[in-house]
Image (cartoon, rainbow, N blue to C red; front, side):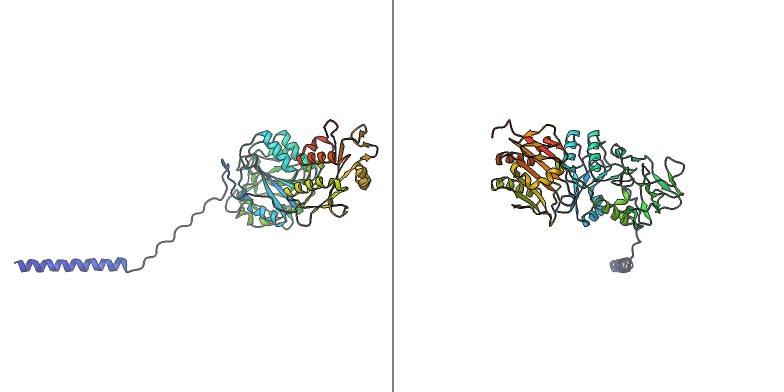
Length: 442
């Protein structure tokens, strides 16, 4: 009996082993290919508002032939790395880019001071989606900048909050509160419209078709640059045909674009978007900026081959010349001390009133005369004693700054005022200043 039980138990163990082994071979030795995961397509539009905005890749100034400023002092609703395509094209043209501010809340007084100082250096300004409105004083600064040949690029977007019109209205531009859409012909989404009608222009050169991803329309006093077709509609009009998402302002120094998303990769490379951005970069880096004396020292270039000669008319003025040279070096401007003028180079001329004959041509052009007295566009003639006069000759090919005084000590004081910026209180016009030190002890 015991033998039968042991035999039955043995058979059960054998059968169990066979069953386990067979299952193991079936489930572990055969191959298994997992199903292909379904591809999910997510919308690429940026969020309508950016509550915080860290600077991911700081933009700094380098030696170049010009400077493009980017407004980041009005809590602007963009990130600088979203501009990588446009910034790379600007850099390729030899221009530097620099942020004004760091996207944080800043008082109106601080903004005005920072903006005024930065604009003295710039050839162009980009204003993108400002969340805080421009004050009257700030708009005055930008309007003056544009009036002197500075370039302005305004970019808005109907899906992101902005107060762009507080500045744009100064130039006849109105970013309308609509968005453009096309339900018949689009780039996978009715808001992703194609634009194929362009005004012949430098901005549209080589551009046949672009894709805009969250575009709105622009009202402008001048002709538009790009126009929507008959299938495109506006959210606030029955028809969007012939509306302009890209337009000039009241001059060719102000360009407005009502779509930010197309600048962001990969949209920036769709169709002819890249060519359009190249043309925008060319526009920003073709400088027509005219500098005034208040812009010192930024009318001097900092790029290769743009050295400045500091001409000292007398040996006693060498220390003042060295002071100017060192100050220019702090701003990245290379300078060298000379005793004679090279008429092909930018120059700072430091002399006494008795040296006026050497620079009489520049003085005459500014309406300044130095003989027994100092006369010019400031009313009655002035005594030469304890007086300094500074004149900027604004030739576009060459800038010559002249400072004359009655003694080396007075010239030194005038140089100090030049370098600390207080000379701006002595300006008699855009290109001349007169400083009196008669009440100061010598």
